[in-house]
Image (cartoon, rainbow, N blue to C red; front, side, top):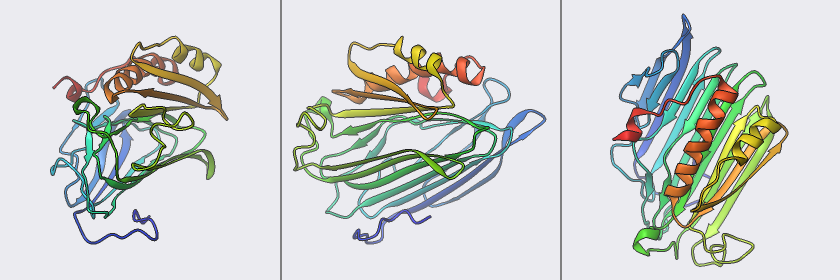
Length: 278
């Protein structure tokens, strides 16, 4: 799938493509296929809890600029259980109106995937087109989140110019269950308007499948003094939205929610990725 949206000026920059395939053998998930081109890779995988496979996505340049293109394709085969995260926040830097493009396709086939990246920071002046698409079937299980942060709130550097085109989609058996599209112009009033972000600089979306009312009640039992959140259930998908002045309160909230949901939905106690402690 092409990660460059039509009509976007995109002079050459870094090109990176990572393809991962997780499979199960004797009840343990391993990584039989790991192909990468350019600066996007997985160095090694871990099994801190036995059967599930933990993998850390690494982008050695440390940031993405206009003209860069990142593509990630993850296939989790039948019976496999993978957990993906990142060692640090993903950073999209200011650009000279060129778009940085990112496409992430996560495919589950009668399998389990936990998609737990740390936050994504969009610096003032960044131009970004990003899409994450989760494609699963009715026999699969998924818990995942994405946390965009606008500018650098701790440094009082607001996202006052730049453009974001952020898509998050979840499909089951070729039918869309959730299609979320965020369009934001740093020079517009989307950040401050009450119909927009009401001055919040960080936005998070957590998804879980398949979910029920009991799962919703679990999520509602988790609260944060630094983040506003709400949860709903639509067509078997649990959707939790959160906003805050910075990304950290949302990340901590989502981790606590994941620790509640994981035993209920996946039948396993929560084992935090080792990289989060470094």
